[in-house]
Length: 397
Image (tube, rainbow, N blue to C red; front, side, top):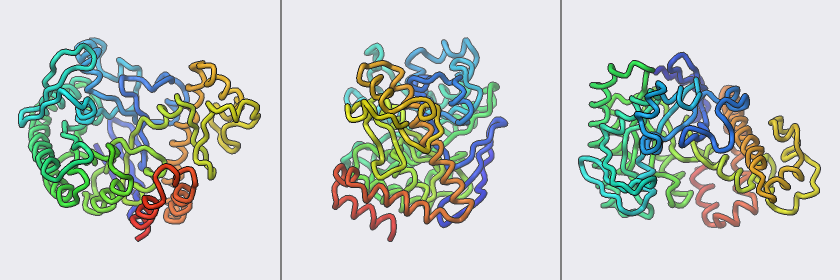
């Protein structure tokens, strides 16, 4: 994998990631295809193929069902799902964490009950890497321990110690096994844990920077902590991370969060938010409304497109009234049309961030965009005025 930072504007970075003859411009948002598909849109759809070079799948889910051997019969995960571009797979650390109960961590690995057949499963850091190499993915993630929030310091410290040991074992196994993976070249990323505790996060960066991972990711955020704590972590550690590797924030997906994270120097993002919220009727818009809920009867006679200046397929062809009708009568096409709009919104946001960094006007763009959220009564009503003040102080101090 080759990664280079092409432009800086403050701490914000515009870069190029090249792997298996495919180039990805950063900052980049990866649509989530957890089980091998985007929710509601085939990967062969021209909108997806033309606008995204990198998607995220989940090796944990795919190895539990349908199983690595089933996928390998068709070659690689790319062939199984019909996707010729790049795939990054998560290893399952967050998914195990999200099970909540019947999970046991040890120095050897993690034991849990499969949500598919209720059978006990044991996953080691080596097996997590092995699974991803067998799938022939382009970027594999190490197995980590995601600290529960709200967390205490001692618990976060223990989780970090296990994650560090697993990082060493993951890369060691990767080095020994990589030559056997003849399907595609696979890069391996490390994951920084440590909860909301800055000294633990800094220790994690130091430990993982000594392992020659191809990139570093920040895990354990957006798991229940306050947004100001998310930003505090990202602002503190962004400046400490290696400059010559991609910096990935896992599971961060609110548009406000993405722009803020780019402000702190991060490059890669993923989240189910644009696709999941679409199924519930939410469409993101570039106005003081921030988003609209088309399941509301308010729009049943609205002849406008979702967004007047949007050139996505949905906005060019359908009215708010029509999409609202589909959603309110539970027609699946309504969610599909909103998914297309939301993914287009995210794609355009990443493109605009790229242009702003290259044009050296990123700070102006970021201030305008972020303030449109922080000053929105809709957003303030959700997070509270005190939290907004904390966010503003973190962002602009």
